[in-house]
Image 1 (cartoon, helix red, strand yellow):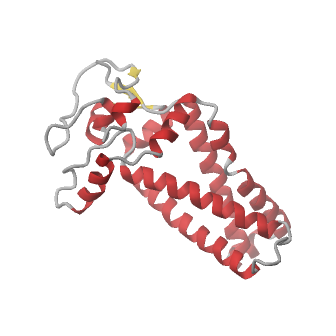
Image 2 (cartoon, one colour; image 1 turned 120 degrees about the vertical axis):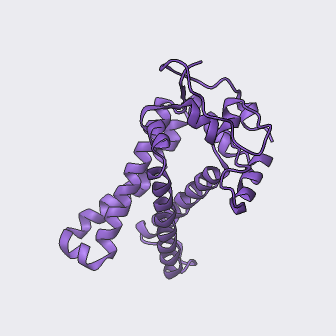
Length: 229
């Protein structure tokens, strides 16, 4: 049995990197537009505003292009399913034992909620940004309200993305999976047992795998088994 398993395809990793890069450009240009010391340091406000607008407009594009990829579409369907195991994963957060009951498919409940929030927030930011960009064509909508929603959405996105980055920093194997596409089987068995088709028989995670070759391979579990309640 191989020691490493394939977690993300090249297309999925490309979507993740492109989306992250565009979000970073949006964040840095927003700082240069709205934080006075940064604005004075950077200058060239019209250029910064143009870059900010186009980066925001392009932010959904990597995901839309990624839908051409079968593995990416399969993962989008996984995000769209919230099962009994996901609910138990959330309940387990209140347990004194941090590992008890936390069995997950390819994505755990926290990752699914994060993905749904990010997708919804990006759409809100895109919609409000377009209203502000095109000289506010809808006269019956107060511009101050649109600015408030856009700014509040930006703060919420920054906070949630910061949490996402902190979780990634704390899990080197998860980062390696997004960087190289494969993860250690022992990590997958501990964090995503149902993804490997290992139906839990006890409230504790399965023991780490300790043997096998070094070539990555895809998990044997089907998507139905991954999403089983």
